[in-house]
Length: 320
Image: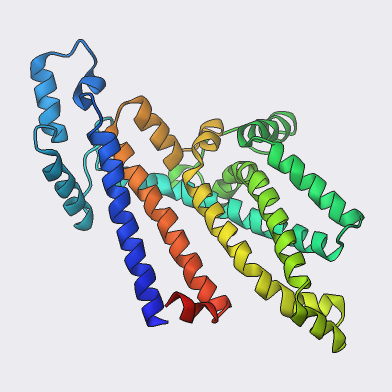
């Protein structure tokens, strides 16, 4: 198990290193002058030179990259051009919205999808199965932003149960509180979860059906276990391996794919920060946020790999 974790950790570090190079190359080495783009065509040579010095564009590309990496390893981040604030502080503040939002959406996704997928598999080719598959197909066809607008129209405009947008904060000092923050993220989490729950329900159904056809399940049934007992004791544990892969990818997507939903609900999260940074040509913020999102995706995949070995120890020797 130790060697398994070391190999996965090495892959994690290598992936981050390559990702950082790609992010730097795309944002820093593409044709064009970043300072010129930020200031516009009417900028004076003096202002261009001053901004190039502030952004470090007067230094060689390799030195800029190594300075960026050294700063991140030491816990130092660059200054945002728009906010004149370290990007680390900006991102940390916005993560207080994005991470709970992604976690809530993932909880909704897992609870609904696992229940629906197992229910459909247990009633294969019957009315319940057809109903779940039809509902999941509709969920796949609904864009997140359109469903978000429908939720706002129903619960905020017509019923007036919740606010149409904004985030009051997690503390009373911010004007909100834990319950107010939870309510503000409820509709955005549902909007994010609808498509992901549909995908995961279909994968869960397929995985459970595949395992139910295995010989060891037939043996368990022959020994006297009911269909329900075989399902809960033997089928679900083995079916969770492919399902975990999808869950890991979905959680990574929920973290990095909140831009549109945060815009619709006017939430001050990381997605909205990226949108604003792109609009303001704040490449320092874009660079650090993109690398953070890549790191989150890699971390989630690392956790999924470890969970594979926990759920099915047979995978350890082959991976190690």
